[in-house]
Image (cartoon, rainbow, N blue to C red; front, side):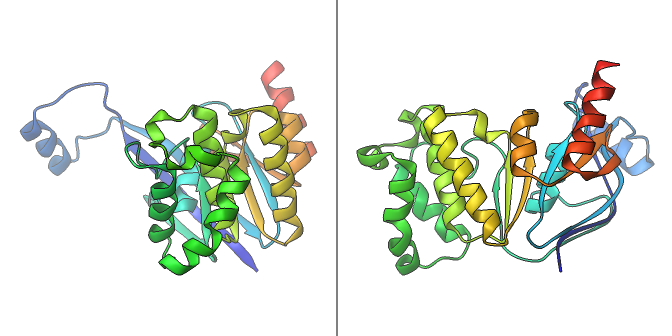
Length: 242
């Protein structure tokens, strides 16, 4: 069963290189003259089956983060369709979904409420989240006092404890100390053994090869290769050095 399916998906964004008066912008929209757009994805189609681990590779600006945002429901396609079956947990940007003025404890409860957990369920898993993060007493401090590594610890701990069918990772494992990175990788491998699906963006080929069995190569918003992770990464790296 497919947990993710893209059918002819295209997505573009308006560039903001030039400032316009509001009336000028509205006039351009109504007359069809608003053409300065960046095409992030172009007619992309693929399926991810339950239990698959898929890497997304490509140069900066290739459309990788846009693809993850569409899976997470943070954006909608201009054309085509995106179908998601199951709960998605996303780590797309460090600290996204957190509030700097709230404590770590309050941020855990905030994120839990956003995914529909009641207070009882949150209380049951709170200690496990804190223990995995290793934050200890810092869980009672405002998030704005955290280092980037501490924010990543809390974000990852929350993400893997909300029982997702699909976990999205966008370069977050490059933050934090090495011991916690090893802990995260072990947890991801356990996640895979449970038959869950992983979608990961990373510029670290060794990490991608160890965590994923398949890869998609995006280039200027187009899907140019979909296959075995080693074959795709070898082709992508060969293209870079030419």
